[in-house]
Image 1: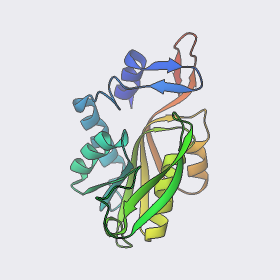
Image 2: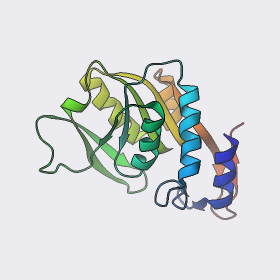
Image 3: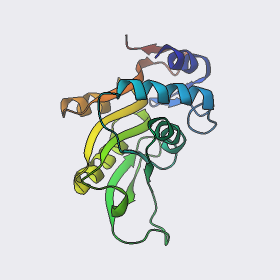
Image 4: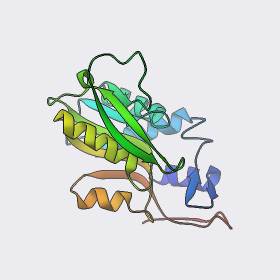
Amino acid sequence: MKLLEERILRDAVVKAGGVLKVDSFLNHQIDIPLVWELAREWKRRFADVPVSKILTVEASGVPLATIVASEFGVPLVFAKKTKSINLSGTVYVAEVKSYTLDKPSQVIVEKRFISPDDHVLLIDDLLSNGCAINGLLQICERAGAQVEGIGIAIEKGFQPGGEELRARGYRVESLAVVDEMNPDTGDITFRE
């Protein structure tokens, strides 16, 4: 998606260790008109499958997934990273490791929000090694829900997450795939 690639080139910051900071427009400060365009693109790409729920991980995926859910006209469910007293009933839990925080955590969804009747579209802002998405996949599997696809705003193609998900048979629609990043020059190369 050219619009997203242009925005990445203009505003993203490449840092050492394979970190791509997109916090000025995608996951801290949010460019709402841009996110609406991303949501419309996923709606177009996933028009051939039923979607009854959008699922993402707290926190940076929530703004993006909210607009995607609005575009699809379905509820958004987000996996919480901490168990609070507000969680009632039984829950699905999966362990994930954050790429940027480099530590394990749990993601939690109440069982009443994901069921075997659901057709789920997973949405996230960035895909590196696939840990967060794998946690969401575990939750969907435990719930018996059908995963219809995975929508990623920016995939780091030089890391294994996207290829591993595709090799397992998942449909991954990444709107921009970064093949190379140079923290010394700030150069970014996209996959054709």
